[in-house]
Length: 408
Image (tube, rainbow, N blue to C red; front, side, top):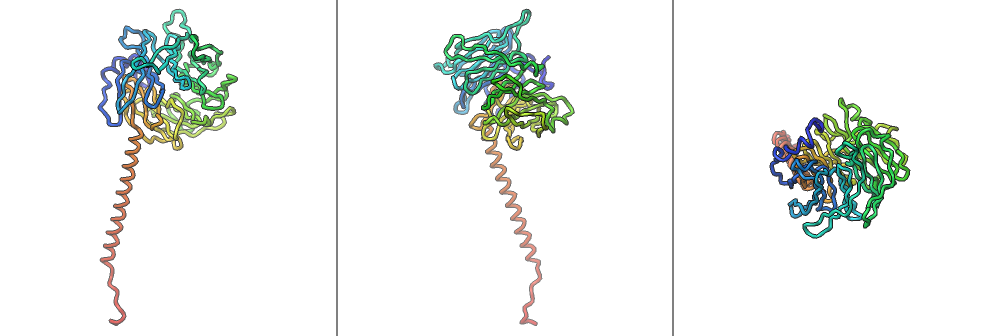
């Protein structure tokens, strides 16, 4: 049985996710039900999103699929999809520079997909590369869950268990991916890598599993620095073992925001990033920001000082970067959030084990809460002024009249 912080997930949720997780409508949350549990997503524009996941063997009746979802006029709808038979989708990565999406599957394949086709056929497979091998006697290849592209869009990093392979992307070729080598990340990671993310600048990338987060030099393949979930002030006092749940760079690549979770909730930590960074030199400050464990960190680079996280309770939270505090929290799902992203509009798009994708109008919620806060302050100040006016009026009515000198 596979669990996520004590919550049964994946195959255990395939049946339950289709029947039990029915949520009441929310005016600020637009949901769309998929026919499978989505495990990953990528954004291709402000209103279009690639969602991937599935149920493994086709005999389960749950498809292994990548879906193009469109948000328009308050409604989420499926435009197109591609099925992969018995091969479960485990990772997707959008390469905006080349207008393609890469999709990794459990049987070791990486598919290049275009998403600009005619109506009803927007998604189409362009090429397929066997990027990992299935060992004899096994049904699946080592995990390719983590996949990331550099800013130029010509290099892909794809995990293979605890190793990361480097692939060159050749757009327009039948064999679009050519292996360039691998980074010896298995010397640092004991578990399967869950995330691989390029820095926007400086030729750096990070790898993350449950117990280790590492920063690497792209050009040399050498380790720069690493840390563990408990290597921060608040997290070090946690009575239970913490696990990393993701990380993201800020826009200029000078800072990394990491998330770690345990039974008490989710911790966020800010760490400096450079080619000479040393995360062991001092213990950084962190903060317990959610009472529910964090399950996903924003897949987009930090923008406008905010980013998003998803929780095991199905919540989508917008976090202020400077204070590391939650400025907005809405229940978007009935089960753990698997991926979430904060859009440039200020809203969030997310997927979860309840078989739903959701567009959460977090910007509107923040605006409403701000107006409520201003109104509450105005009312409070009005009451204070009214109290002071009545107090001084009452005080004046009891004052002793003065006696004029002519009456003496």
